Image: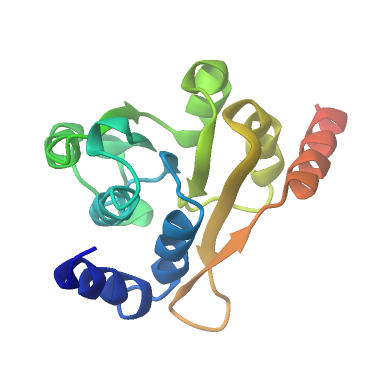
Length: 183
């Protein structure tokens, strides 16, 4: 690994903004993540960086990135975002296998959960109330395998920064059971 690559990884792992993304990049590197499912693509900056970090272990053509986002249907409360065409153009330039799915993330979960395949990492970056988490958790086992890392980004109550929480397999199964009982 060259000095330029090492400096870039240091910057991503320790200096990148927002600070909550640093742990995500570190996890992608440490766990050798090859397939990523991101719910809430936003401006695609993080997606580009996730692919960049994954390329340290795999050729770009072997990295799979799936992004679910409303794209053009975003509202002002959803935060900044890109059009589907622009997001695809930017992500496709990485040479990774890119699949972008427009629509409401929870609706996409229910329709495509069996088609998306298992991802090494699922990053839920869509502003989702706690009441919707059990519904999402119901579909997560179909999109993950036993070693998958599931991360949930949520606003931190005490600051402007967001926090990232790991959803363990046990927690996901517990939430899914609660959803099945309520349904």
